[in-house]
Length: 267
Figure (cartoon, rainbow, N blue to C red):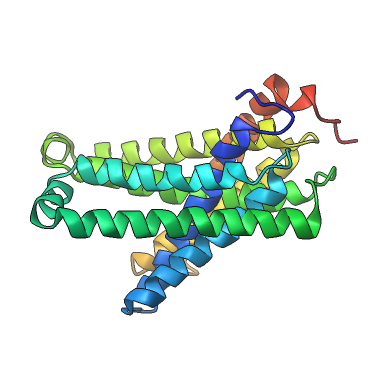
C-alpha cells in the first residue's frame, strides 16, 4: 500500500470501506423505513457516500480529495461485478440493458459526487488529518462496519449462486461468511495503519470492536432478535472481540510497513 505525499493508495482502500459502508447503511435505513420514492432513495445513497467521503477526507494522510471518489467508483464496480456474475443480474441486463446502464451510471455518479463533495468539505473545514490518535477510533469503527457490510454482501451474493449453493451446506456457508468478514476487517485495518500519521493500533482495536459490534447488533435485529438475551450478548461480544483483534492486527501491519515511514508514533 505504497503512497506518495499527495495521493495515497491506502486511503483509496480506506475510502472504499467508508464510502461503501455509508452507502449500504443508507440503503439499509431506506429498507427499514420502507422508503419507496426513487428520488429519495437516490438522495439517501448520495448522502451515505457524502458521509463516507467526509470521514475519508479527514482520515486521508494527503491533501487530495481524489481517494474518496476512487473508493466510491470501486464500490460501484464491485456491485456491477457481482451483478454480472449472478443469474439474476444477467437476467436484468438481458431484459433492460439500457435501463440498467442508466441506473448504474446515475448511482455511480451520485456515489462519486457525494464522496468527492464530502471529502472536499471535510478538508476545507478541518484541514489536513490530525496528528492525534483519538480520531482513529471513529475512523476504524466506520471502516470496520463498512468492511463487515461489504464483505457480507459480496459473500452472500457469491454463495447464493446456484453452483455454490448446491455444493455448500449451511455450516460451510456460515464459515465462508465469517471468513469474508474477517478478511474485510483485516483489509480495513491495513488501510487504517497505512493511512494514519500516528500509531493507530489501540484505536484500531477499539474502533474495530465497536464497528463489528454495531454490525452484529444490526444483523441480530434484521434476523428478528429481540435483544438483551445472554446468548445473543455473548455471541455479539465474541464477534466484536474478534473483529477488534483482526482490525488491530491489520493496523499493526499497515503501520509497520507503510504508516510509520511518514508518521510520528503516539506517546
